[in-house]
Amino acid sequence: MLFKTPNTPEQWYKDANGTIYNQLWFGMWIQNFNLPPYRGTGTGTGTGTGTGTGTGTGTGTGTGTGTGTCTCTCSSCSGCTGTGTGTGTGIDPGIDPEIDPDTGVPIETGPRKGSEQTQSTCKFVGSYYAKDLNTTLTIPENRVDEYTGTFFGTVKTTSRLYDVTGHFHYKDSVGLESAIAWIGVNGDYGYIVGAMTCRDREFNVLIGAVVQTNLNDGTVIVAGTPTSQWVKLT
Image 1 (cartoon, one colour):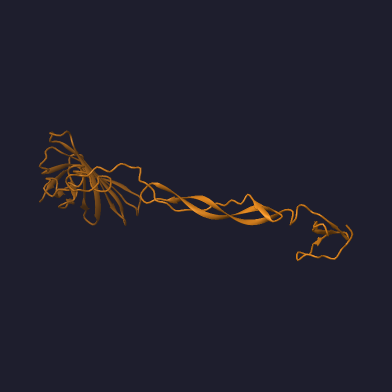
Image 2 (tube, one colour):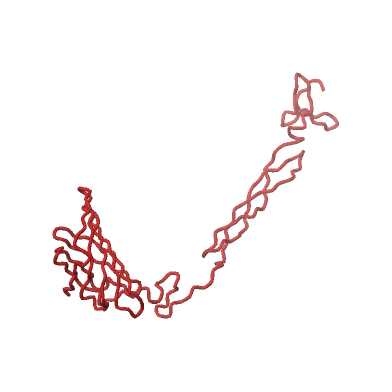
């Protein structure tokens, strides 16, 4: 169609039959069906499904509302869908934990029965002095767990103090003999390591040697002999 003055609010030309020409091309009105009002993008609203984080350890589901895009032709729109994010309450799929009859605490979150048996009555508690090394191993009250064999304490040499973590293990449930190993650390000097045995559960005498590492000069020192005695003082 030859040029006519636009006669719609959108600056298109509408003829007497109601046909809309929506693009002016080289002085002529044409119908471009890829542009409004024949085709366009509108904004629609839709209902979406979202997932939410549940309370507990489960995953919950919820519903939400969202906005999406749709295709509009003339005055009608179709395909208006949206997605949204929702919140929900989850269900813990786990099984109720076993309750420790002694403490009333769930075993998964509290101490297991017997695991906190840090005993001050264990005969291993005390101070042991090695005369040939002028060194003392000290295991304080309540720092021995006879159930797991773990213990904590200190080792004091002539000039240094080390924090010690160790473990001891009985030969069997009724046997008297035990094997003992510990490692001490001093941040300024390095490590000291001990390997010992004891022939009875009174722990009056420990037998064993130690090895020291020196961070400052890179030396390793074997102190004592495999028969060095550590005599209990207290």
